[in-house]
Amino acid sequence: MRDRQSVIRQIYQTFRYEMVSRVLRAASGTIRMGKSALFLPALMDTPETARVLSISPHPDDDVLAVGGILAGHAANHSEVISLVLTNGSRGNTETIIDQRLAVVRRQEADAAARVIGINYLHFWEIEDGQVRNDPELVSRMEAQISAFMPDLIYLPFPIDYHYDHLASTRLVLDALRKLNTNITLRCYECIVPLIPNRICDVTQWIEKKRAAIRCYMSQNRVTDYEYSIIEGLNKLRTHGLLKGRGYAEGLFETDIVSLRRIMRAMD
Image 1: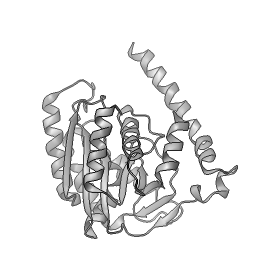
Image 2: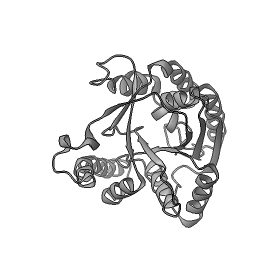
Image 3: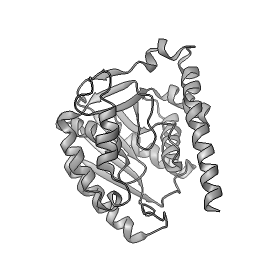
Image 4: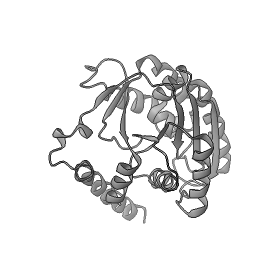
């Protein structure tokens, strides 16, 4: 059964990844990707002072993806809230529910947030794998966004293949449908690299991100995140605009209408 599931998952992931360039091209209204500003990454200025809401499907996703940028926002006196949707109880090698692990992961997330400078960490405690964009959770997300009224929302990009990540983005988009707002959306990469249109030099905050990642001791026993994320992905993002120097994080910045169109096409 496990082998069959692995094959099905691989087919799904391959198909979804191959579709992304076609979908993004259609969303941008262009024929050639290289001719659209949507696909020409620009060097982003130092993270601005803003009201920032970061959506983290699991208790480490947003720090892994944009920990440097969030640290930059905090250093520039932004108000930063991280909304952690699940309890992380399946974050083990067997992916089986372990409620003791959920307690540990909450403690790890608290420690990492203090390192980054996140002002407020809010836990929804949904069981891993159970994020849904049902009416109850949509209303809850709508209330959360309305109460904080962020200028920026960081959330997973639709090419991601993890169910909770995709459901989290759908949940945010459904909540925003009822709100008359022009919030800027910045999609991040965590499991699957995206096609970035923004590159942020996070070299000056990389040691904070490194220290925050080390707080996730339970997860580093499963995957070497310091090596794969910081020395892998964050070094890769310096290629081109930063001439391979320092560390960077990639984003896909967009608006609500465009992201909804991309998500609908991907689905």
